[in-house]
Image (cartoon, rainbow, N blue to C red; front, side):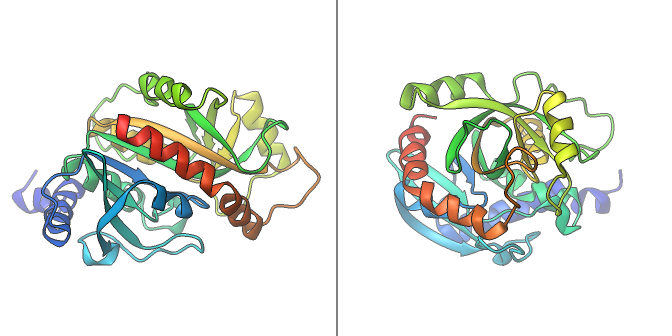
Length: 270
């Protein structure tokens, strides 16, 4: 590979973004990253004191947030003896910016020193007992995008992608937490009832439009991954109600204090 190609690689871009992040936040090294999905935004205030906040667009490789309920900012937060890097938005695959753009935040976090990452999302649930606002730990995933953030013959083991150690730690904090397999569809349209049935037949319990590509990139970068889905609605065909983005955000707001408490107790222990 030529020098120019290496210079322009997504990994180099992430390194540049991490350098700029350190300059803007005054924090040389972060410990744990969090990516907040739809409805999770109000939970961030429970994590600790923000020591800095930067616009994602001030860093190389990031574009402005494109979805209502997502804020295009990155916050540096002090929680106990840990420095957290909190992404208040994410780039979704359906935005059409390519897989590298989707995982750029994850790669930047890795270059910023983070050894672990918490990936959250708002999603549809297949279990009728999961009422809107229920947090569910992600135990595994089905990536139905047909894409990978890894290019070339780089073989990455995904056996324990969603860390069983971190999931056990979560259940120590909140024994009522359930877990399930997250299924990523490309979006941006919601899944059809038939697609939801297919996801269930394949072993899925949660359906959404994010997370799996980021988790793969995090594992490639050597980070430990914790995934938490907030069930904002029952998936298509599970209930007889139509799906609505405003309801997704409302369910998230209603569950925000519980999510904040959960993250506030888990993250310092990672």
